[in-house]
Image 1 (cartoon, one colour):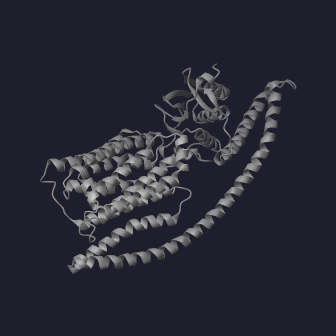
Image 2 (image 1 turned 30 degrees about the vertical axis):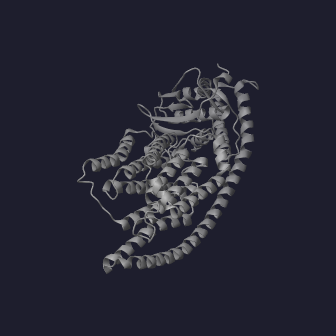
Length: 565
């Protein structure tokens, strides 16, 4: 699971540098930077851009892509850009009588400035206290933004002289442009770091979108009005919002609380508005009269709205039916889960008793065990332990998924933890004629639940033992990967895991296709749930030579509190 592959970096470079090269070429070659003065097209593209930004805000508000304070500021960023950029559209000369010069240039720059500030706050590295304060005061933040927006509308409508004076301040415009560009570029770098730490489509989309918005600010400020280089800022803003919306829609289709109605409304608006614009322009072209535009616009708006309402009623009814069936399936699933937990819980006690009894027989405390029977009793003991481990995994997986398993987090010495886990499976490895190796430097510590993390290592080692052929080598390593995390790997020399199955093998009861079934497929599920409960990640990749390498990360701890071996 390497997110910083060279191919991704090359692709990112093309997407980021391509628009910049086009802009530079247009500015350096005047013959290419032709003039295209079309107010109607300007009105349509700006209106549509603001609409897409508003849809992005709706999806983020629905809980897609970001959480907590990050989501609050992201919604405010796209809402602010949408609202102010719409004023820029309405002020387009020749569209509505009396609106020309009502802050058309100022609205364009202010929209990007507010967007840059809020987007930078959305990707800023914040702590728990900051997150809590923002969530507690989000209503006040929204009220403040609404008041500022109302005041701004009042200024551009009632004080055009003040607006003209502000727009004429070259130094002020330069400072605003510089701050906007700096915040967007810093935010892009931060979004990229967030994506590398936890791959999400929205953070990746923002890492690309924010440099485009920065270049849009350059185009808006430095290019002559109506030239192609000036039009680039409209295209770049629209592209940035569409890419972000695409990432959100893709993520929204995968969330458990998928709402068909919200999805339908968002996409209908995105499709419906361009259709209305195209019909209006078609009426002008066919009639040859500019006066036909707005009657056709009104008729198209009414027709599309009626069609939208009819389809919305159908979609809402379909969503209600789907919800009823989903609730019924969830009830059945919960019943099966409760029944399984009841059986598994009742199995744990007799299995524990059997394990203790077999241990007493093997120890010879009751009476000396004949050698002929010892092998069979040891085999029974191994089978009993595997069954008991299976039962414990089932119970703990359910608790972890429900958030009911309380972690007892303490600073742990990684070297000691790994050595104890290796020692616990040494006998099993020797039985299969496998070699176990470990390489952990002294002084590496993590914060975590000792019992759970030891079982994670034991499960990964048991899994490696099952699939490594006789004479193979299994190696455990741990290295600090940054100032706040440690990476632990378990590498085997088995058949490996196919690329298309590397995500699925962490699901319950999933086995690697084409390989002899050895177990029930719960060990890796437990590992994933336990590691994620500690704030870490786990994945599988190819080993350097042959086999698989299971990798997981955990937060670092303070070694001073750890008793070293």
